[in-house]
Length: 483
Image (tube, rainbow, N blue to C red; front, top):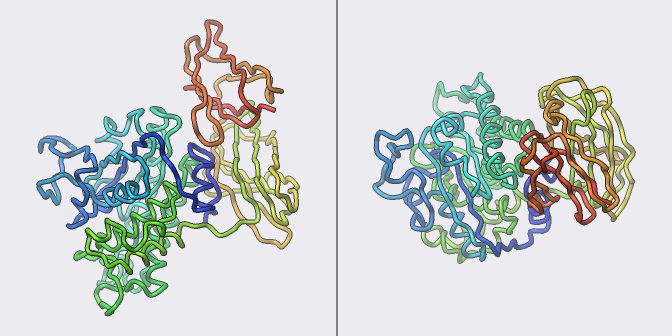
């Protein structure tokens, strides 16, 4: 299982602090979020399908039947909103200024969205984008899944979004186990417990998350379903209903019921905003509109909080980068905010993002309540696309893993940044063409400066406060340390 340590991409620390402390997030400026998915995203059934539709922009509404994005299935005659509509209502009640957009077509995979909907997705205005794969996509091929497509097109869509807006935050929305694929005779998972399919979905989704390394987090909706079942809140088998327990499945036994849609929205809301869903309370407005009893709403909010909130970790990692600095050299750097009885960090390398081997070890601080910085240079990196992660081990033998970071040795294309680190002076980025745009991002993932290379192909970066930065161009990304 991939450890859910903070993610080094847009929104690293903002997401981290919200998840760890449950602190209310504020949004003084409007945040535009796009939900990309299918009927698991729009919910399929009333009352969820059209809930709060007046406050959600359905990107496909009104398109002619000749359009590849025509809403041909479940067409209710009105705009769709679905689970994003519930998210929007949560945001309004929390005082968050969100503009919510929906790009969701029944039966569509991420590959379909890449081929049909790039005109919607490839826009610089998106601050946040949520991607949900088909219900079977993350499954292994032996179970009818297509993980290679998930890996390929989640990355292609991530790259498309970040090309348009380097500061955008992206999330993967985990799907859930289907009762119709588990309980009927001769179904794919017949004879197995419901959590078998859930575990396969979890592995596929988190593998996509780890292989890419540029998503902020996974919204673990499917895991929250299993938590609801394990705690006795929801029934495990809708074909054998249990009185007093919620049915998370709709009438077809695979789409979400209104209860599951509400739980999913709570998971998404907490994952994306960092606002504790329990603060919405039993009188929450979406639950009332969906005829969900106040006590049930509070229970579902608490389940989402319990699922998304990470357990305390011996090391609080706040930054981790892997950056090619030569034809066979990768420089790694990471920072911790605190450590408790930490022993060492083992640097692991992979050629495929799945199978890792140790290449070096760095001693840890032990116990520390102040920020610590670490570096490691892999001077024997093979000339190929590579992936790195940290295997952190504490003095009691407990271990956790960092997110995976890609390091493509060809990606720098001759970029140089010197002096680096700089002692508060100017750093010069060279190796780019005159006029090339240069973005500087801080550790919150926020763009703090936008400039361009001069006629000599050099961008001068001066006056930056002390800290770590990513300097991004169309040719690649380099790390800058200002001391």
